[in-house]
Image (cartoon, rainbow, N blue to C red):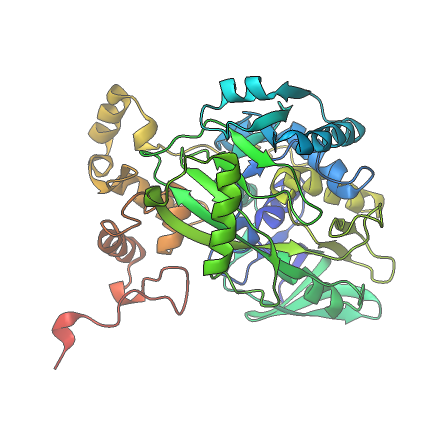
Length: 492
């Protein structure tokens, strides 16, 4: 049985960040993921906001991790070479009756230590965002808010971890702990047993089931909270800013926002469900999202929508510091006293993306506090080099790139100008892209107006060629999602 110092369960944004920050130390680390790639759970479908930190309840771990994490993103984005823009965000009041909520949020933000908060008049908001509802009465402006690419962040963190010695195993599902009295000494998985001195629970939507296997927090439960979204053609509508409505006791509300890729998206709604795999959209949910978005930007038109999707948030029931606030349950980040050798994380919902580097550093601190002697590697490299993105290069840079590698001169995805060279580079990256969706997450291929209608056959061909397998083995997102059944000429 192979033995590791640390095993991390789950390769979402939290697991990947924990792996990356722990790779700094002389540890033999294994990161396991039940899916075929990183960031296929909650990380795969969210609003991609780097929250400022005025939303979480003061005194909560959510508030602390949000504000600490926010401050880390400039350095993090520079080291990992990932897109990040600190554009700021707005909480928009429509009508005079919503104005008092802005003052409450500002006071809460100040309590949480959020800098750069400012109350704006309706006239100023209309000047900054021409598409806003003319009935806007004011807004809370948070200058430290931003937008990022959660796919790029998770992939880059995982790649940097691998570059620094971490092992990743995909299609490897956690099944149970191996215990020696009250100490975790390993795990059972769908691909065999592995021994370890520490196991870190980063299982997201399934973090409750993992901790229950260790016999801790039997009362803790993850209730998936579905959020549905629309995506707009960036050629048809441009929103300059991140626009939140005033929040409700249940959710931050249905927002209208730009993305790091230039598309406008609207959503999410918030509906508690039971099925942790149900990412279907509903007619009722999409209508709720549409009406909520129109309240902020009445000029939106359905004819400009190019995609809809749904994501699940890992909403837990850990007590909030303020028991009078329903739904505002806190994060769990702990080494439980009942079980040794386990670092337990749970309920990491929004603002989990912005909090992820702070959560990772908290895990490091917990291990040190538990007596783990973490010795830094002299050759640890925090830099994850970026690969060329053809559409972002100047004409001269594109010419030189094509001269050096003609594959960069062959456009595969017209809408997003993604080349064969980029696809091949991702297939052979430190964390290889082995499915269509893995290519999509890394290059943004297939996300434009045609939604992959033009590029899919060519991508299947390239994946098969580079991986040395038959095209019928190529999948959209892992086993069970194969594109092809058989070759046409194989018919008797």
